[in-house]
Length: 225
Image (cartoon, rainbow, N blue to C red):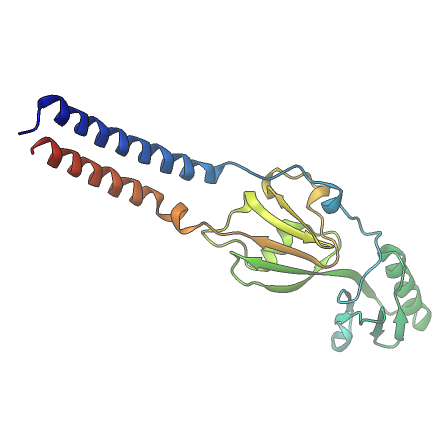
């Protein structure tokens, strides 16, 4: 028969094991609500409506009274866009705001009564834990949150405090809710990834309860031996 001190040692060890496991998982679960992002760097600095459009971006046109011409016109790999009535136009190295003025002036010269709205649209990929992952054309004045909104918003598991932005080969982790208005703006070719909860994060509460229950059962069994 085992001595009393040995049984006490086993019971204490089982209790400590359950406590350590519970504390470790609880810490992991609480970390979900804490931002692990680093401060924005120059790689993800804000870009205004000034920067030139890139291949894959688009010009959005809205004609009053001529809905058949209304739509988005994509810029090809030669930096050329084909617009109704105007034909092919190069957008190479032309700031977006200047390009919009040029297009408006060109339509004004065709007809004085023609009313046209022009938008510079930047191409962005929205991936990860969103409702509709895909490629979207985003108005130059819109931001990261707007792009995620176009994708239907984050899913229930989406972690907006840890989104990843891939820009010109550089990846940065950002807390969307903590960014300034300027830091939320989109740049052409951005890839926005909304990460989802891991299996452990989704089931941490159930797992902690199960481990504590198991540890208690083992401790009770050992004590009664």
